[in-house]
Amino acid sequence: MTPRAVSEDLLRDLAPQVLAALLRRFRDFDTAEDAVQEALLAAATQWPESGVPDNPRGWLIQVAFRRMTDQYRADQARRRREQQTVADEPEQQSPPPDAEHFSEKDDGLILLFMCCHPALTTPSATALTLRAVGGLTTAEIANAFLVPEATMAQRISRAKQSIKKSGVVFSMPSERERAERLSAVLHVLYLIFNEGYASSIGPSLQRADLAGDAIRLTRAVHHQLPDDAEVAGLLALMLLTDARREARTGPDGELIPLAEQDRTLWDRAAIAEGVALITQTLSKGAVGAYQLQAAIAAVHDEAPRAEDTDWSEILALYGLLKRMSDNPMVRLNHAIAAAMVHGPEEGLELLKALDGDERLAKHYRLDAVRAHLFEMAGDHEAARVHYRAAARGTSSIPERNYLITKAARLEKAEPDC
Image (cartoon, rainbow, N blue to C red; front, side, top):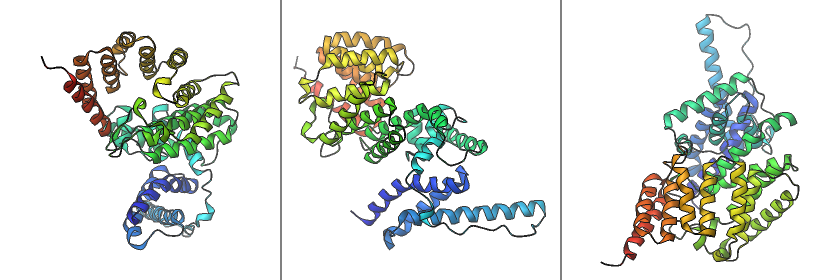
């Protein structure tokens, strides 16, 4: 691996930790984020030539800290000039911090709960966390929310200002506060993992760094709340899903669907851990949406071959999930399961109800699923139309290539008249 590649990986991993360390000291989200970006830029410029320092986290913290100190000094000088007053004594400035003064053990978790502060609306909290903790760009977050990038930039900016005005202290919230924010925290972790497992934009199908961060943070939440069934369910869902990562792409990064994956490449240790977690959790009685999704993932992972998948059990689980959640993606997956059990016509009939749901009516996945079911039913012309429509709707290059290829293969398979 080249020095530049090493630096890029480190910068991505360390950025949330450095931001958390600055927020612990300064409590100014906007200025702290600017300082972190300048420190990252300095590292990206210097490390490829000089090498990665022995303590890269401490290096970044010191550079960002000095940037914030300089900024505060400049602001104070400007205010003094504007007020035309001079303080009796110059304000004492703290020396650049030593890395040991900042504990990285819980910083990511604290930052996660901080971004999900009740001063923020759920969409704003989600967007801010995806930016600060997940490391997603504003464009990626905007794509996930189906809004223009400028709109998302304004939303994130307002969220940071709300955090600043709320006066929230950078520390682990109390047990009561954790309970109040837990639902938002789990939702954000779920979104971060999903973006890592199936990137919504760009040339790569998946981003292992994001999925890994989501799993790491969910483990930390599970450690804090070991008896919470939905936390355990979400961790199990991530492990069972991420276990298939190596089999999801071919040698050129092309998408390989679940039914065609080489299951010997699946991570059996992750599957065993996920199955154990969800089995233990379901036995407690209280069942939530993340637990049901984990149970569905377990059914897929425990099937030795695609044709051995117990689709009847999956259909039953999606039926429970559908009654519990108004999420249109759940209804979409329920239609797929129904098609696998009762035939493609049943699935196509269920899809008709989703055409009127504004949340999904123009989403490429609706076209992709409809294309798959038409292909199962033998209507290749309709399948081609919807595969092409789905390809036009996705921002993921590997997904687009897969859908275009599916349409092309169906066209070649048609007999000559």
